[in-house]
Length: 219
Image (tube, rainbow, N blue to C red; front, side, top):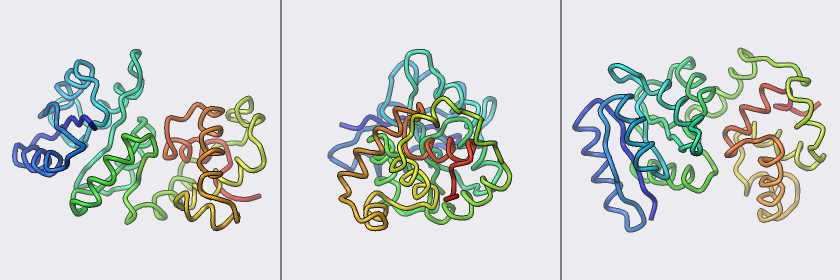
């Protein structure tokens, strides 16, 4: 059972999310928060599998709450940022705060539920309307030298680097497998090794690491 915490300052949104999530047989809403302070308190108390977090909330906003939960001493709590705002600075802020996913509220129910499952599984997700634009802008506006994390980079195999670069183009495991002429299970195996070496929780944070360390595109 995937345990979900919903954090949004609008009661109607919290109620709507709860109805959608609890209609699924493999999910349940374990708590609801109306601001960032309550979101952090409940998440640390309940330890949900995913926190669906709004960005603009009174008091502590969603980005600051995400930063706290991502660095929780008891273990990072995965956050799926779900917001009406698709401004680049909000997306970048969420990614840099450690969010495992970013989704616009205009997404349909199927996309929302798929995103929750993806984040809960440790895969991360980024709204397809944002993926290519955001990743391109992230590379341009958040440049970082290859030597930013030389210890981790030096342990990567050539195949892991290839997979990382393809992740940065927004490809799925299936698409990466096709591009490299290997099995999806092989991609998953190399991805697991890659995440461990660079200390990333999921594929989305691996992309953030790649942009910061100069591995976002082929040489």
